[in-house]
Image (cartoon, rainbow, N blue to C red; front, side, top):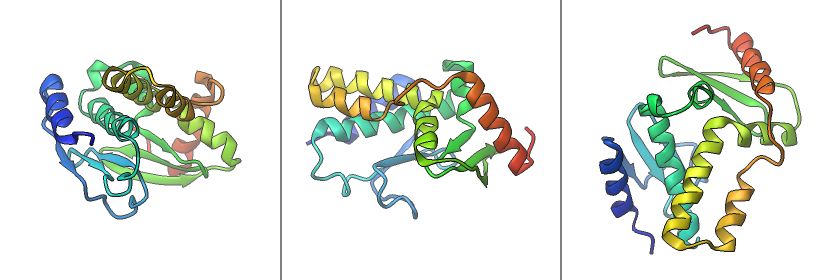
Length: 180
């Protein structure tokens, strides 16, 4: 059984982070594997939802969320692209959010699910979190084919050029009419 507490404490110590870990998902996230809430500095892991999942899968989602915690709380450790992208949440259906001063502003963009899935998966902060999770899980579980397949599932089917993100972010900014 994957030892969430052990790896959580080790990650917090190694990264000098003061985080909370919760296995009680916030409302609206009941079917998510995990999430990070920057306001409460809490990593939420849906252990009940993933109870039948193999340990490598539990570890992957766990380290993915821990990486998001670092991205939000330690921005100087990350690239300009990660820092810019972390302000934007782009969902598979075109629902988008921009975080401004801790508040989420929502809008809806037009386009197909395949397009938005690739945009979501290719965001620099998601790619970084998935690469980090993949490397951590490989160190713990070994170079398993299933780990690689899980990682590949969460990577964009094709790279998304920076100018596409420039356009999408500008559209989100225009729709929510919030300038930072």
